[in-house]
Structures are given as C-alpha cells and as structure tokens.
Image: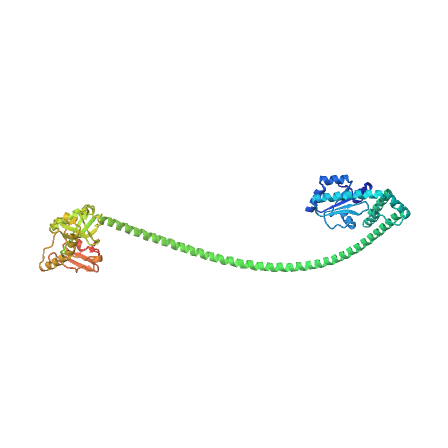
Length: 488
C-alpha cells in the first residue's frame, strides 16, 4: 500500500485537487488487530483498488499529535480504524477493529463505487446548482466549507489559517463558494482561536492550582518522610539493642557448649582408657584361658592315647586294663577270654550296646571306648563266642535278663563261701572293685561292698564311686562318674 508521506493538511489538499477519497488509517501500538489490518492494507488486491480509485491514504499512530487533532473532528472509539472521507468532508465509510480480509475488500470496493457514482451525479447537476447559487448567492453554505471550518476551529491558529487558505483554493477551483462564505469562515476561525486562547489560559490556571496542591502535598510528604526517618532510627536503635542481647545470649550458649564439649571429651577419654584397660584384662584372661585349654587339650590327647578299660563280671568282680587307643577290640576280647577261660559276650551299659563279631576289628577310638570305658562281661555257656555273637535274637536278651539274678546269687555265695580274688598276670595289676551304675542306672545300683578275699574297697560320694585297692595306688586315686566311666 502506498501511504501519503506528508501531513494531514497536505493530504487533504492533494485529495481535493485530485477529486479523490481521503483515507485516514489510525493504527494501534503493536497489537494483534493492528497487525492484522496492516496485512489487509498491504494486500495486493486492496493496493490495486486504491491505486485505480486515486485514493489519498495517510497512516497515523494512535499516540501521535495528528491523531489527537483528528479525533476532535472525527471521534475515534476503536482501534485500528479507517476513515473514508468524501469531497465535502462527510465520512463515506468507517471500518473499525479487526475485519476479515474478504469483508475488508468488499467494503473498500463499495466505497470506491459510491464515490464514483456521487461524482457522476454531481457533474450532471452542476448547471442547475450554478443557477440556483446565482439567484441566491448568500442563501446556502457549502457542507465541505462547514466541515473545514469546524476542523480549523479545533486546531491551532497556524493550522486554521492554512485550512482557510485551502478552503479558498477549493472555492476557486469549484467556483461554488462566494466571498461572503469565506468571510464567515474566517470569522468563525478567529472565534475558535480566541476560544483556544481562553481554554489555554484556563488550563494554565488549573495547572498552577494543581502545582500549588502538589507543592503542599510535597511539603506534607517531606514532613511524613522526616517522621518516618525518625521512627526508622528508633527501630534501628531497638534492633541494635536486640542484636546485642542476642549476641550476648549466643556467647553464653557457646561457653556452655564449650564446657559441655570439654566434659564430654573428658568422659570419652576416661571411657576409652577404661575400655582399653578392660580390653587388656580381657586379652590377658583370654590368653590365660587359651593356655589352659591348650594344656587341657594336650593332656586330653595324652590320655586319649591310652584306653583304660574296666571289665565287670556277673559276680561283681572287676578288672582294669590299659590298651593303646589304636588297638582293636579283639585285644580286649583276647585278654578277657584268656582270664575268664571261655567264650564271653562284651557289652556296655551306657549307651546300651552288645559288641558283635564285626566290632572286634574296630579300634577303641572308633567304638568310643577311649580314654575310659566300662565293659560288661557275660559268659557264654555251651556255645562258641562266634555263634553267640552272631545270634542277635532271643538268646542274647535271655542272657541279659538272667545276668542280674546270677549276680545276686554269686554275691550271696561269695558272702557264705569266700573265693580268692582274680589276679592279673600281665604288666598291669588287676584290681577288683564294685561301682555304681551312672546316669539311668543310678536308681537300680547296689550298695558298695568289699570283697573278703581281695581286700578291695569302694566308697560312694553322691553319684560318684571311688574304687580303692590296697595293691594299686593308681586305682585308689581314680574317680568314676555316673555313666560308669573313669574320671582321670
């Protein structure tokens, strides 16, 4: 779109000289509607129509001084706005706000057609209008001149004089305005200028009054500011005192914390020293205990190298013999068979177990007979040992049931008819003693007795029996526990 580069008076003069439509486009300040209408005006079709119609268009901003003077003649109620003004100053069309492109094109086209039609009608009726004006030269006032006068009355003196000159030029060109009309318009322009001066004086007086009000208000504000400053100083003094008290309180708190920290450090140091002493004592105690355990383990190893076996017979007699722990049970069986003079059955009371032929090939350690153990010896009458051991049926059970009665019978017989004690011909001496059965057999154990011939004696201390033999000091000092095993 080609916009007129001059001001509004120049644009008006140009449009009147051309006899074209005067278009004033007022745009807003970078709003969406103004941008949309700018694009509509820059549309090639709209530009072409305006160019063909010899449109004089000027673009002004809503915040400019030209818009202010223009709005005094044509009120501007919406932005953006486009005013299409004819030859006589009458608005042919006003387009306000955001309008669609197609609608905008139709409105521009209609305005251009309306202007062309009005020009055609004005040319045809020009002779009649001339005769009428010649008859009554002072009876009518041109509307265009009236509009120009109103516009000039709202402007400054220079602009009003310029518009008067423009009106004179247009009157000469159109030859339809008389000299009396020009004088009237000049008088009206002067009146408007005087009104402007009066209005300006009134505004200056109002401004002086406003300045006086502002001066008084400024004095009040200064006084209020001084009062606020004084109050602020008082608040700062109070705040300073409060901060000093707070700092003193924090200093006291820091001192208390230091005291508590020192106390905690001393306590921690004392606890640490105490703990270290306890650790040293505990370590010494542990080392002592480990040493004792090591010594006990070594003694246990030494004891476990020898299996001390006590053989108990049905008549209450007993024989003790030591064997290497690595030897088999066959050595014990051979020893007791040789002493007893016949086949026997070997068993233990706790745990209750009868040894068979296969057990003779096992060592004392494997049979858990080391370091000490008590083996019950039951004679086998009329049967070889192998068949007796192999028979694990009712014969073995019957032998176990009969053995207590045989023991009691032999006991009474030994009291009535004393018999010589059994001696040991090997390197170790034989000893005869009676012992109480331990664990589950304590309730059914017999009282301790002394053999008449052998001189063996037994002593009971609670559940523990001590076997004493005058011929064997080691057996005299031996201690036997409740499960019939010797305590070394």
